[in-house]
Image (cartoon, rainbow, N blue to C red; front, side):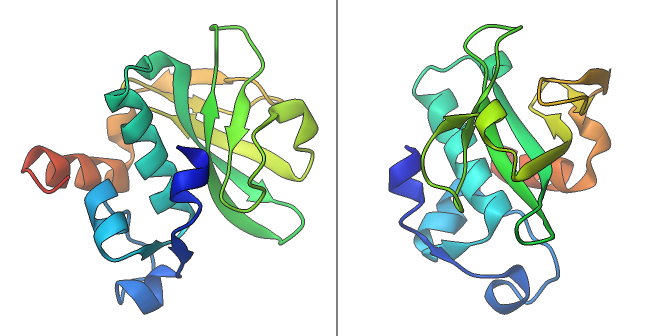
Length: 148
């Protein structure tokens, strides 16, 4: 899944969608064969869920990519609730444990059930529902309307 989606061309939202920040559905991402870090992460998240990976094992994680001095999003996978997550990324394409990704500074993470503020490189402190994120709500509305 990581390698498959990482083949898609990276295109900044302003050039691709004419907007500063747009979270594409997995189909939009594939049909247009382009997107930015959120789009890679969203596509991987929904694909792994469709393949049977439990939602609580997956987090969309907003980070600062220190080597590039930009905000970035990656998918993190937790094999068990307290385990160190694996990082699926479109910049550094090898899947590695978070402890081996010192180039990423976690800020917050979320999935369909919750939102966590980062503390160190684990899941972080639960702060409520992911519905607090407007772009996530917009994306879920488009997916619910059949625009996956």
